[in-house]
Amino acid sequence: MTDAAKGVFALTAACVIWGLSPLYYKLLSHVPPPELLAHRTFWSFVTFAGVLTAQGKLRRLPVALSGWRNFGLVAVAALMISTNWFLFIVSIQIDHATEASLGYYIFPLVSALLGVVFYGEPMGRGKAIALSLATAAVLVLTVGLGVAPWISLVLATTFGLYGLIKKRLTVGPITSVTSEVLLLLPLAAGWLLWLEMGQGGAFGRDMFTTLMLAFSGVLTALPLILFSYASQRCTMATVGLVQYLNPTLQFLCAVLVFGEPFGPYHAMAFGLIWTALAIYSADMLRKDLARRKLAA
Image 1: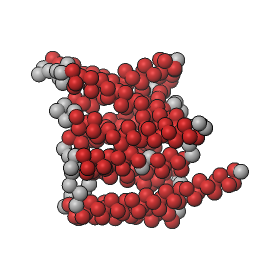
Image 2: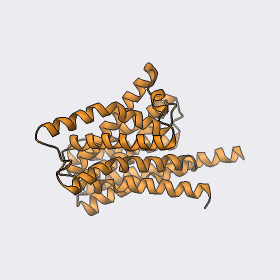
Image 3: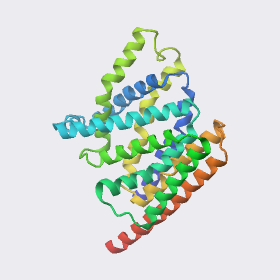
Image 4: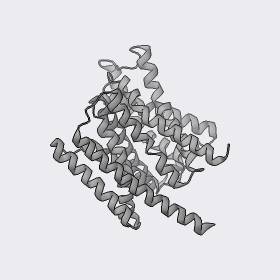
């Protein structure tokens, strides 16, 4: 198997894990979202720290937090990813997984817009059309349902800003995520300790819940490691296209497994988003092909 094929396999595996993660959080619906987020933070740190130790890279952790600039960037990244995690957990528990999947469909377009605003990347006709269609999709849902799809917008924006900040960090993805959860660790550990001293938390209540909560670290770390591996072996166009597998699986979980409603306004909005992503992806593929021809 070639390196490129291994990369595509790893990327697909990462997106499948992310896409099916609503099933995991649905099984833990009896655990309050703040407690579930605290466990995900705690066990993610345990898992990531273990990975860095096995790689002999744990000493890089202080470097990621050295200086006010690095510390500030990591702190804002931690705020963005924790907000994203929390809202995703809440969306599953309140039966809004469809809206969550829409957020991750919108994310690439939000990321493209942030690139234009913060890095001066060219807009281009394809990107402009895609962003216009995404805006129309949000308006359709807002008018049709009588409320803006806030979960979708916040998920897409926080993940987009998270990616924007990560571009400014010089350490590797595993080290940077470990430093982020390290900053969140005192809050997570404090919350869990407070629960145990009071009414008692979910951890230790029964074997299933305990093992599932501890597994949250692996569920967070494994797809990120696979994605990092794939990013070094796949073209950006391939990464961009395969990533749509994630929200597609989330959408299927929401509608087919959880039985969430999918009315005409949802159909119109998703149709607009899928059209926007098709135009955006075709534009990215065309530009990627042109770059490869120039490099040849």
